[in-house]
Image (cartoon, rainbow, N blue to C red; front, side, top):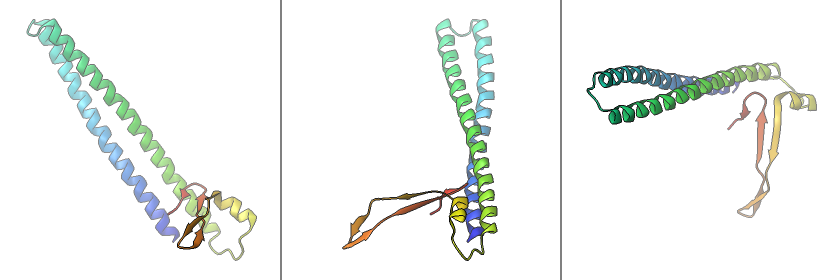
Length: 145
């Protein structure tokens, strides 16, 4: 069970990082294209090949797209950082679980070590039986389905 949790958590983090890295690569490539387009537009404007109005329209559009792409790159970089931290948390959780794998008795100290919090939901009546949902949030990894 421990290795399946670690594998599942690690795979999700790796997939998220790979996707964010692909998006960063695409955005940076487009930023380079925009830089080249900006230079070309400037040169055409300087030669009088395009009007002031068209030049200003194009420059405004390029600057807007550049700004959006730079923001996206920043968001993806933050996502990568967060996912890598989550991966480290998964490793920490697995190490913690391994230490307590052969526990015979559940103690308060053990609960405090492994569990961040437990949320107890209102009981619901389902088919004449009362069901009460509990969400257990483990340290480092949160809730595990």
